[in-house]
Image 1 (cartoon, rainbow, N blue to C red):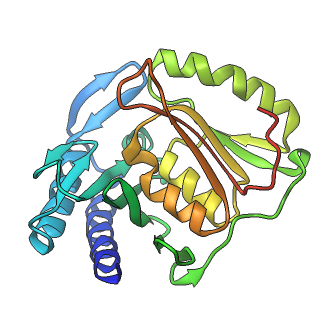
Image 2 (cartoon, helix red, strand yellow):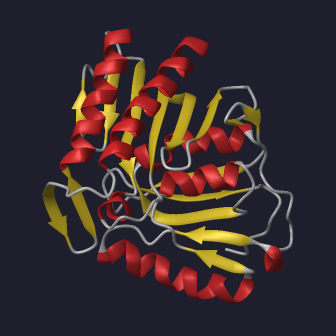
Amino acid sequence: MKHYLDAAEEAARTAGKLLRQNFQRRQRVNAVAAHDIKLQIDVEAQELITKLLLKEFPGHALYGEEGVVGDQSSEHQWVVDPLDGTVNYFYGIPHFCVSIALRLQNEIMVGVIYDPIRQEMWSGQKGESSKLNGHPCHVSERADLTEAVISIGLAKTGETINANFPLLQQMIHRVRKCRVLGSAALDMAYVACGRFDAYIETGISLWDIAAGWLLIENAGGTVDLRPRPDMKDKYSVTASNGVIDLKL
């Protein structure tokens, strides 16, 4: 897997450099929704990642937020969010990342999350410890909900906001702090290295959490991922350090 992991890290750093160089510059907006924005830089970052990965592995497929490339029936499928935290990026908030995972026959084998502003790289491969900038990282050991810091994602649609908001209202009274930071992949990365004790969202896409899923499990945590039957290609996710009782 190391060959795959090295390629994923290189692609994430290269895309991250593009994002960092264009951060706080005027952006071309491709689409606008009530709670979301699509930027041309998202497309350019994914095209760059696609070029690098499929040049190295031409028989692989890529499944990304900005479209799919290659034969999606391939045993090897890269799952990519080229810019997770697009609204933050557009508004000049320095909290966003690149997320890249590799699925082999539907099992996540490699995961990389890169924050180009802080230059933090979370990386891992199946069966080995997750790392942050090359050093092993681990989930937190906090078991008391009153001491926990957790992230509640509010997602991108009125439907998912309505589903998550009652959870936020409940949790905010139970935990030390709730956070809503605007990047699902970084939320997962923060659970993997112990900054957050849990992350919960009820309407998320696979590319947002695929890399983080592997990183959290490798770091000693747990991820409960369930398809939403009422929303195509969306999932409910509860990721935690594995010892805290969220009382859901």
